[in-house]
Length: 292
Image (cartoon, rainbow, N blue to C red; front, side, top):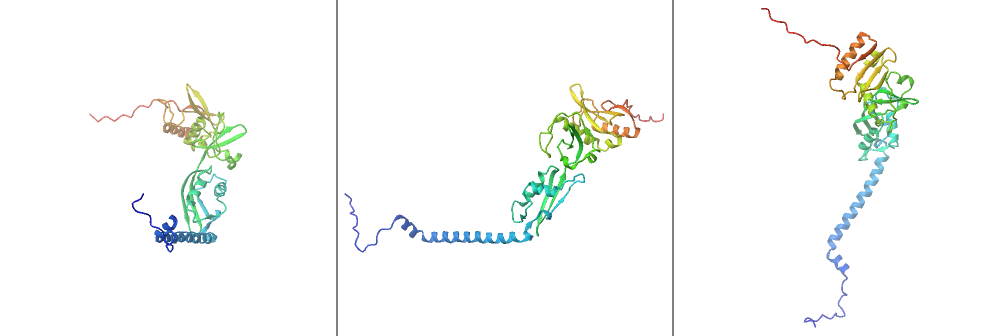
């Protein structure tokens, strides 16, 4: 039995409060502040939505494709890189300037175009306009494949074929002896070491292709390594040797080979020239002796 008997409720006493009612009474001020803050947040959100809708309805705040300036498109590219990049990224329907991801989205849209090697910068301005600067891949050779040719850059990346025809492809050296097919889409590496090596050879020779009338680059096996021969088709064969960076011990450097190629341009030689062998005995220059 309790030492303190429970007080009997009198007829006029108020009924006891439930737990929830007591909590509300005790925290009335705090709950009121929360309600006010919540109402302010909701009002602000609704107001921002209304303002954003008005802003996006303003033509000066919507970036249209024609307002995107593209800098750096190379002269050998026939495609409309700007239109293709925006279309393929689904960004050709007008873009609100208040999109916080707008710069990144534009950069990515151009970065994935097969002709683009690098997006240098993206600048957004108001009224709605943008300037995108890119660097483009440069074709250095055409790989012979069944049915025609495929263009590659200096690293062996496959380039868009639709930008070439028989006439525009003619000046580029042909890479023959390739039996593989590209493993990726345009804008991705061919993924064949032979294609990469041949493209590197074509790139370092540069203008000497035209000066010597060279038209073909083909692989040959020398011992346990692949070497490369250059040819004009009938009168001249040049044994270039290993691809740049893969020279065998004692093999002349790329710089030495290029110097000899330039000499060949002046000499107008025919037949076979082996750039992997020393040009000849080079006697060191002597210092004149002083008079006795």
